[in-house]
Length: 323
Length: 255
Image (cartoon, rainbow over all chains, first blue to last red; front, side, top):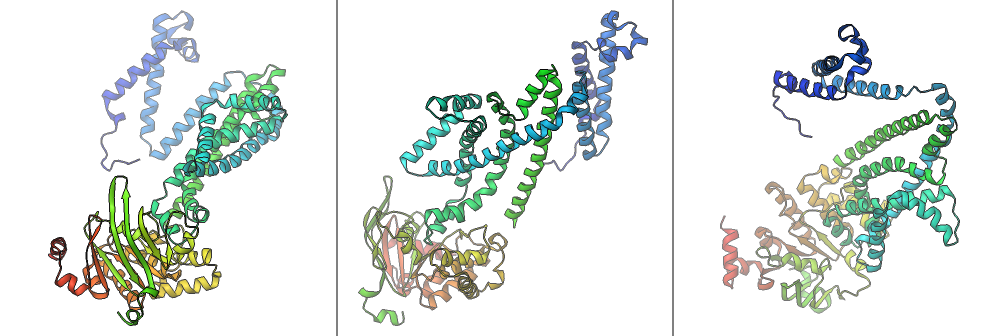
């Protein structure tokens, strides 16, 4: 985004803004009656028994929290921007962790299951997603070329396909493929069924990404290539796609990250991936939260790693494009 | 001018257009065009914008399709059912207004691609030929750079070298200097003059009247899809026949 070159007064330094923020925070905390929480315990010397403190206790708790909140923001604003980002991330993370911690989790249970969740669950999730994104990319190239061609049959098939698979919920596609194929006499295992569903669904989305990427290459590139006598396939392979791929990669990376999480949908047909294990491992001992939170954190870490990889790849192609 | 004109005209006709008409939807862009180009001839096509001159030159390698009349290039008729369009195009070099170099390939790779991929020239030989052509357009030292690292004039000279590497029978120039900064026009025109002197058959859509005068065998003036006037450069500039030509010349030469 464009950063302004003239720096105005910071909003956070304006008393009117601070007071306004304080008021909003107060109302918010007042609404959710904080006197019953740990804050009320801290304020016991002032407000007496929290449960019986009534409006006074409720207001006092809300005021203390609102002042802490605004004061925190004010202090953060004194630091350079990088430090600000770090502090805010850390605080949000701590709040998030506190939220998880409040479930009274049994960590020994997590410890005993996490190994299997990673070796079996994470591995299956990654492998299903990776195979699916590769098949989806191939489908997308073919679909994009078909959609751009002036062959009526090819265009019709491609547009019907994208319309259908973008129009149905992925969960329904998973069921339809897993339970529908046996109806026509072809019994299919859960893993291939999941891969087929993910590939077809994401292939449909990526067809549009690839089509847009190919179309964004200027007409002059086609003309220069064809006027030298390069045939269509050669032009596509050596001239158009090498230029379109750098444009296609960032949105494809997004699709891969999205697919990684959507692969949890194939747990409904019994594939032993992360989501499936999170539900079944917890069930036996009524430790649902432990397993769900563990799986959630694994998904999150994985996504962060992929985001870093994606930004590296983007940077690589940006440098290539800038030369 | 030279020895080519002494040969009988019929057996070295590189391009012939007979009664060519073309429409974009309802709008007729080319009206009954007749033009023949013999080997070694240099034709300059000029005219106001929208007169159909670019469309005409693009019909010659069938980047555009014409609807009426016949176009023959090196004796082969260009029509919508032709099977060998790619082979024919290999013999027709084209230089575009916006260069259209391949940005993901180095200058050298741009020049090697055609001979290597479709002419079947081995890599080493294609490289040798590319370096020779880059030397001819006076930028062999830029061979390993990418097009975006070059100035407009250099890019256009690479584009010319790229076409020459295919050893074409005829070169088409579609306003090759129109997108250039003024001080880069000269280097491209010098290259084109050098090419003309080597005997290349050339068809140039351009407004560079100095170039037309210097190397043109024939200047063709178009307006509203028709060829209004054609003449040798001296008579065309000094003694134009039609009122439209006089008006056009007075406008482009008055500054």
